[in-house]
Length: 461
Image (cartoon, rainbow, N blue to C red; front, side, top):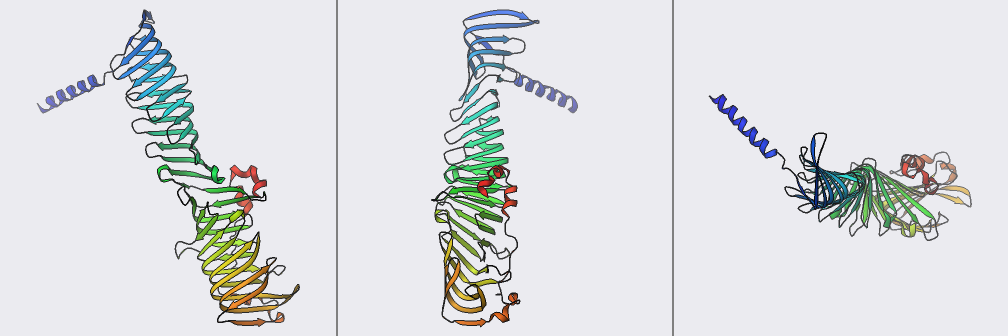
């Protein structure tokens, strides 16, 4: 008996579901009507001020051909379909009553009160609140403009999925990608593959493989081989290019207006190179700050001209597109190769070292706290021994990038080593921090992995 009741219950439920899913017949009225039979199917042609309705869907047009058995209609001329806040405009469409959707093979436009969506062809599914548009697709709202080869728009979710030659832009930046998921209400985007972000105001471009853009927070990050390229022109017309490679690249379009690069960071800018764990680029101030976030990370390294700098943090000011000063904090150390002497390196260490430049020339170096130094001496161009010094602070003056004067302050100790005792034994005269780092970025290798900029190699070299 229970089996019989169960069978009857399933039958009743199935019948109710079938009734509830049965599509309502479309109705079409107009100024004139012609009835005919085509291939054993009843067909009605309605002409003039045509109005087609099905449930909450209303479509106006100039002419319609209704296929009675199929519950379908071909709509021709000034077609306007309306459902709640959705309005679809096109010149020709085909309406499928059983599935309650329309297709247009001519230019189609959708407006829901928040966005305007246009394309060469498209579908709109009325029950699903979903549009699928193809070819020359363009979506516009109050914040962004998006273009793509194909786009699926979920009206109830304010969500757009775009595929192929995707481009989304506003007055601050532009994002290009192979595909992109965009939530309009949250101004939130996720982009995938062949990503290019342009910041026209900063002449900056970031490329990568994955992106998240949080428009309301003015925040964007890129992962999967991200590269930052920024091209500037100095006051004297010299083109200067900065290239940054990292595991993750972030952009903050807020009051600080900064880029952040983290993990395995490499920087190239003219004759300036760096390897570090974490870098911040303050675009308005023309300042670069590099530092290690944890003790288990290596110190940032900077190479400039014939010098190598290390410290817990290094700040570089590049006003007017040339370096103005470099400030090294925490276990600061600089070594500079002595020209024409392979194994001779001037060295200085302290708690803090500040290098000051005029144009591209080093003019002054200030060292603070526990100063230790080795400097090779010359009479004219003839090597003349080595000076080992220690003090609390020191100031070194330069002419033509060579030391012209050394001033030591407090707790001064100096020790001179004559030339005959150091020649051939130079590596015995090194400070505890002495390491020649071999991981300086190679410009040609870096350029080879940036296909978008190979054609500009004359500028970047």
